[in-house]
Length: 214
Image (cartoon, rainbow, N blue to C red; front, side, top):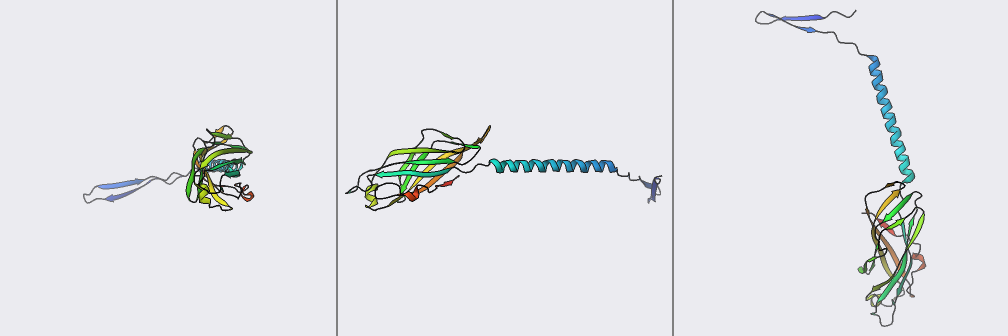
């Protein structure tokens, strides 16, 4: 049997008897504690499984960056006798989507050319609109007739002329029915060089361009 309640009494200065009754503490209910622990363990277990599943799916379908190459480039009129004439740039970019399940959507692609720290071609529109690229495909993007003034004179009749081809755009990644709603800035930089004949040197044809997202 539980111990009877006890009463603690004390006498105040006025002579009246005051007291405080202490009630017995109720015993704990083991079955409630056990159920609470089981529910917490089950919740943490489910949370762990969901987290691991999401992580595995991310590793399986995470998008790899697109790969850009300058596969062709010619600079007509680069080494004209007397110099001072216009140079016409023509060529082709190659965009590779290495993903198995992720497609890319590019906004318009704009091309610029930097020569001797000067931008000799600025924001030439390459696609005229958005470009959609399916998984595991390579898309050629040609350009031609880009006039550059005074580049022939600046080259000084040298045998090799180096320049930087830059591409800017925006990009989205898409997976089946799920797609990224936000555009991400895309900046591509390709270091290239042409020889005495004005054609792209072979060692630059397979050189991958650098890519920045900012």
